[in-house]
Image (cartoon, rainbow, N blue to C red; front, side, top):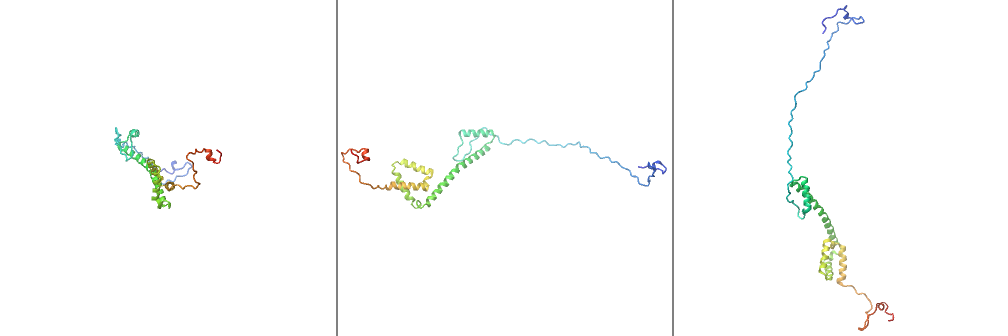
Length: 223
């Protein structure tokens, strides 16, 4: 703050070049502000230590009980030994190991049923085709009888049984082409082959000597 106003003849009332300073202008004080400083807090946040969760995962048993398997599927011997070693190495419990066994057996079942389904679809198609075939459908019973009679002429029941079993296993007995071939063969066997026309057989005297091959080929050749 200004304590007193200088007189006009006071050197303080003039500029360095001699001009009089306007003493009527308000004089303002410049206040200096000191930035406030913040004191760091000495308080520390307390955190509660997190205790590690206890492992509740079931441990692998000393020995696995027999696994449940679908009908027709076996897991024994070397396969079972390797499976249990794998389960133990992974630390699987009885239930976890059973889940893997279920997955494996389901995959095996799918693989096994695939070809069987394809085979059934194929043979079903053959049966439908033979029913619609005009040469087989209306004559199915008669064809079975004819083929049966022809097979009986073989005189070997076991051979006939094995042949029929092979037809059933492969399904070829339902194929229209196979049925037509068997029917054509059986018809010739059962009905007999036609006798070819020719001259009468030569009469040979009881005491006649057998003819040589040359005489048979060249009957006019001198003896």
